[in-house]
Amino acid sequence: MDTHTRNGRANRRAVALIVTLVFLALFACMALAITTAASSNLAISHNRVDACQAAALAETGIRLIQYNVGGLAVPGTHSALDLHNAVTTQLQTAWQTSTMVNQANITADANGVTVPTITVTRSDGRTGTIDLRIVASGGALDNTTVTIKSKGQFGAATNSVTYNMTVQRGASALSDYAVASKGSIQMTGNASIRGLNNTVDGSILSATYSTNQAITMTGNDTISGNVVVCNPDGTVRKTGNISIGGQQIIGAGEPQWPQVDITPFKPYATNTYSGNGSGTLTLSNITIPPNTNPTFSGNVTVYGVIYIKSPNRVSFSGNCNIIGTIVTDTPAVNDLTNNSISFTGNISTSGVDSLPSGTQYDGLRALTGSFLLAPGFAASFTGNFNTVNGCMVASQYSFTGNAGGTIQGGLVCLRDSAFTMTGNTSLVIDRQHAVATPAGIVSSCKLVCLSGSFASSPNCIP
Image (cartoon, rainbow, N blue to C red; front, side, top):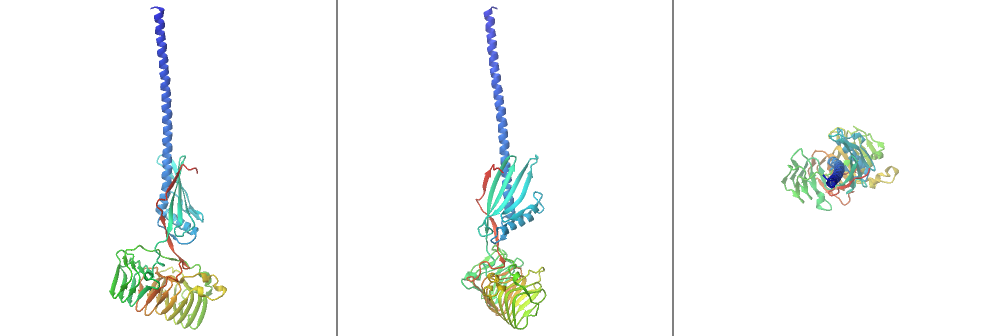
């Protein structure tokens, strides 16, 4: 073999080696690129998983609050703190046995409700957290916005979401009806309920479920407005010449029932009265101790607050003039026999705004709109009254004989006991001169979810 041939073979082997090395380098680069890409894609996948987990945690926080607070009855006051306290109490009660959060550490102030961080552990041992806060904008007024803020964190990813609820006032037992009773309503004889300014103000409602005979009307009874029954199986039984000016509605939603708070009135009842009520009396801002059971007869005038402690049977008869408001403690025991207030004879009333001059009435004159606030007491009327300057709330009512008059506000029966009217009793409801928010009455509102208010802010930095 000559030298030329040997050189050619060597050159070809060198070229092949170079080509092989080039391909090896190329394959090494491709392998590195694939490994890098795979590692990057894996990291991206992990980040996306973490981001999805953070978003799921944030939305879980929203769902937790919606489930436990949606539809909650809250005070219809002007105080954000009252609303925050109501939400806090609800969450503390709902999560009392929960292991995800210490319910005792849920706190409220005027700035909002804060829930301790909730930690969620997956089956692989990785953990995420949920931070919750609820803030009302301005207090529990109609259409006030309540914002739920929830932040979820998983790994390095965070996601914050918000959802709004609104405070809405539903149908009110006190302001929407002449008579609203948790018990049955029974009218016999020539009983009538009508609105002074328009017919619908003479509407009545029964929310009893203890009997299907929710409303019974016998004789020549008249209702100028609607007759409403909450029980879907309830009935309106009519016998005789019955006149109903509005609609008859069965299965209506239950209205918001008023809550009585006599705290504003109690400081004015500075004089203890332990007499029997007889004789000619002029009294001012009195407290009637338990078991006094007085009967105010003859010529009696009472100014300011009459604060009745339970148990007591108090009667106003003869020529009795009340310029002020009657309030009671709520009895610890359901006993309408030994907790009663009766009005007989000729009773005249005036509101606290008619009180005479005197420092003992300063401040009290502004507590208008309520005449009788007596939850847990039975109220009976057998005589005439001209005009009652305020609403009445009790746990049982009885109107007999020729009892009746004009009431500037509604009547509410807070217990499933009968509201009865017999004889020639007549109630006229004057809404035009009624106070929209009577003193001593805390009306409830509801927290309602606001559709379309969900908003998300992913990858938020704590």
